[in-house]
Image (tube, rainbow, N blue to C red; front, side):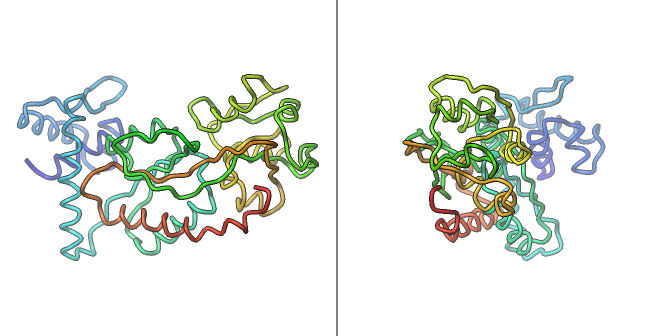
Length: 307
């Protein structure tokens, strides 16, 4: 058994394709496939399910994946301890829901990049369920996800709360809703709304807030960033956590603003998750620590009073 065999399995699992894994690893697809098959023969287990649409980890492979990742993490620590400054560090992959706050994510990634100049950071927007699956299967090292206060946290993850905020209405300054001190559900229903798709925490919250009623017109989108742009262009309003809007470049420029929801005391949590395992690569640990430190330094009063 060789380390590169395990690295190949991890790459195919993460990318879902023998071809994409071969491209990333700079090997031919036949060579990668044969290397994986040799490992499967040695272990007596089919690690991958191969289909025309791609390759994914098998059920048997998923059971072995934590052990594979532990070996790779141990090798990473060994190389780091040896002071091998010339190797290219492994990529850190961060899965993030699209309502994670730009004023926290961007400075943290910038600071990490300065401290780890040869470590690539891959930011992937995904739904919460996709991030959890990616963490378990090794496709993500860390995940930024939202919960509503009181939600049950899933087992198998180390979860660190970063920010706690409130849902707010995001509007243009010239919107009729911006003239209100607070916005109630009836006022929201009268305006076009930009709604997160089903599967996102804010979709669940808005459905609960409106009591199942539908607005006069609505758009559906996967991301808060697109939602904020649509609001800025005058297409309607949206409901997001305050930490997703306040401090955003569009908000700083006065293109969008926020108003509190009338009579609502819901709290939204932004948390950082990683697979609950005994070994964490140094780069992943450093990025985790930067998120925690920068979240603590996040100046809540500067984000505005009524949010």
